[in-house]
Length: 584
Image (cartoon, rainbow, N blue to C red):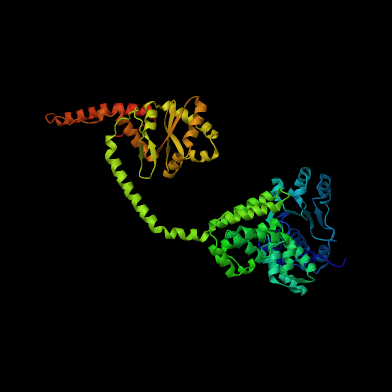
């Protein structure tokens, strides 16, 4: 067989020929130059990124007597023998088919023998994650204390499957995916060397279809060259890779973005009739949306020539869409791709996807201009709201000391509203405070984790920002620090959900109400005033005929007498450990 695949003919033979792994190659060359060669290495990374090639180049470099700057000469007998795979001291093992304990024991027994021709005996174990647990254990001791003239190079695409005891005994190098730019440059170089004509757009299609694997890119290129008689054309590259022609793709996308579902469905039918793969269509659409987002936010980050489109086409699609619309489209595409994995009728899902994409946003441009058109009206509304808030604050401040006791018989529900829109109902709070005690509050705190576990996840997120501040046998008062969280709690059924959970835990009806944290001290003060616990708080002016010292004693006694009732009630309600008495 005279013909060899491109990835075999153009396999890197020097470190500087490895594509896209400059950091790794520099580190390995420096290790060879400085003679700081480790006994074991782990090369991990996606397929086709140069792991095995790097291992063979490293084996040549450490054994080459004419190496320069860490690079093998590739001319001496040792280098040529390793390249041809006929040097007995460089042993390449496929762990996928040699994964038993016996194979590893055989290596362990032979590793103690000195190399016959080279300076180092190099074991390259490919797909090492396929070894069995027993095989890994058999390899462990050898990796830890190998002979001085032995080097192990382990290669894998799935390093997470390798035991940590193995990883801790090796130097790990992570090979990254080959960028489309690097793959394009490498294919261009190879075709120039082979004197094969090509269209650059075709190479970009192949580079993107390879998804970071240089070997995959060369395999696709090989197939396109065979298909098009040694001329790489865009149409052939699109056909071989199953990618969608950019003009068809942009037409389909524009029709869906403008809400023309009928035309989009017809374009979809044409694409599928031409043999385009549904999964590849979704991937191309996601790539197109990604390009649009980049072009909108940071045009300098996007190389237009890589997209296969022009600046005019990108600008036109950007004007017809909004970022929110593009985000929603990506969600639809991802959802459809997941669903298509488990169906034998992908065309149905693609048609439904097309309709959903057309309904994401019917008038994106109108929505973009709406906020600007209504900005003046919004400013006026904000001013009116500010005026109302100021008036409400003034009324609240003037009525704070004039609140009357709550009359349970009344059927009217009065809400107090803070300057940030937070609401609380004293008709729900005062009945709980009348029977509140520290013991009941402690009981609620003890039951809190159990109650939290019974709530729905959406309610648990809100409850994390609240805490109980007062409780009786059949009710609790919860406080919120943030205004918008309290508003969300009041607008939702959170109180009912918490009430049902506590009812199950305590075996009876249980009331739940919310208060803003910054208003809680005032609510307690108002409660004590409304229920007469502060009657002695009003001080009578001492007689002018009394001596000054006697006047001070009388004032202190009156104050002490008045405070005793307040302090006692506060300690009963909230506990002596959190009640703090301070002199005015």
